[in-house]
Every structure is written in C-alpha cells, then in structure tokens.
Length: 316
Image 1: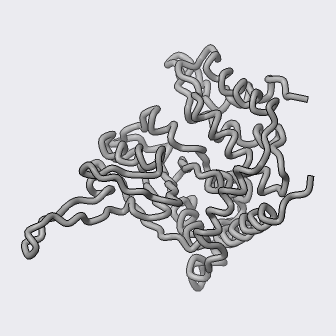
Image 2: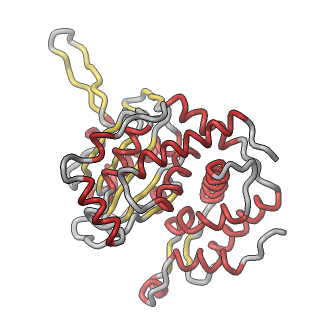
Image 3: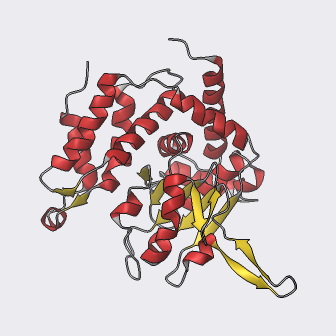
C-alpha cells in the first residue's frame, strides 16, 4: 500500500532530522534511528553510557534540529524537586507569591546523571513523563511536546540512587551510544579543529511539524496478529525463570508505538515483525527486575529479552 502524502512528509521530516543530527554524532545511525523512533512516538529516552560518548551533544543537536527549547539539569545529591519544578517567591511590592518556573518548563529536558539525585527528586519527573503535565501547589500545568533525555553512568555507582522500577518504566527506550570506531573518532577530532559542529547546526523542522510526525505514527497499521505477538513477548518476560518483575502493559504499548515509528521512518504503512524485533530489547529490557542469583550468575535482562525474541514464533 502506498504511503499517504501527509505520512510521506512526516517520513521526510524524520530523515532530515536524522541527517542533521548525524552531522554532529558520527557513526551512530542505528542508535539515532531508535532515538528518533522514541521521539516520534512520544516516548522518553534513557541513555546509559560512559562519560564523553556524546550524550549531551546528542540532546543539544536534537533540540536544535527541531527548533525546540532545550534545558539541562545536572542531577546531584543535594538537588531538590523545586529546583526542577519551580518555586513560589514572595513579592514584597505586590504582597503576593509569584511562581517562578523551573527547567522542567521546556520542550527537551536533559536530565544529566539522573541517578545521582535522591529518589524524592527523581520522582519530580514521574507525573510529566506519564501524563504530560505537572502539578505544583495544587495547580496543573500542561507541557506539550515534552521530551526527557536522561543519562546515567554505568560504571561509577558511588553516591548514586538506582532508579526505581516505576521510574524506569516511564522511559520508552534505554539506549547506549558506545564508543565509535577509530575512523569515526578521527572524523570527530577533525570536525572540531576550528569550532564545534553544534555551532553550524540549523533547525530543519518545527515543533508543529513534530506534532504532525506523531500524528502520522498513530496512523501506521498494526495487525491483530502482531499486537498479539507484542503481548506474547511482554508476557514471556513475566514468566522467565530468572525474572521477578517483567514488562507490564506500558511496555507493550511502548513497543507498539516505537515499532510504528520505525515503520514510518522506513516509509511503510504497516508494522512488520522486524520492526518489533529491532527495538524489543531497547524497549523492554530495562523494565525487568532479575532475582539476585541470576544477576550474580551474569544473566542480563537484555539477554533474556533477546532470547525470547529469537525463540518466540513469529506470526505468519
């Protein structure tokens, strides 16, 4: 079936954004594809990677590409929820309290090293990530086109607070950029000899066009057989021997939406099993909790989800 004109436009917009970001983040097209899939489907992203791999640069490049407002919060143990949400300050002249918005009032929020803040501060993001709004002092504020890109360091756990399962479940995907190959690293050095590539990046889409992309994602068809396939994958994580907590319905929904976005990126009007298999680990693995014995034995959630995808029968 031929893709509609509006959906073709959405696909071309995604390709332009990918080209724009790829000019700054070299050699990571596969990761960028999944990241754009999460953005297009309205999901949030957790980047778990080593320092210096380009996590902050990726967030800034993405914000600049869609002309979005971008704010960064460096999470630390002494950070308070009000440092993110905002606070009311008494105005001596008017004798009234005036609300000063925090950095959460933006389009793209980089929550840098999110696991270094206390659980109380981490929870400040729960409502907005799930419902697209924040409630402060009894008043609700709607945040449209809101996107969280959070990072955490997988090697240094001193002074950190692991994200609870409820927080992890709010992220549509967990990704890792990893180190680039030698040739790409040489290109990075060469590209930054005179100035940073971010200084040259220009918007290639607008927030209104991002909304068009998200509407186009919803129009991508998912057959009844593939819906059942997605549910079977999620249910299999709950029944795996080493798993104490499997992926819930929110995981099934995130897998469906991200697969729809990948299909749109490929210019297709329907989801194929390959789209689901491509992102199953990124969407589901971080939602699993393993029993201590399995962790000590070296079993990983990613390996469990990967095994399920490989062994579960694919609908004809």
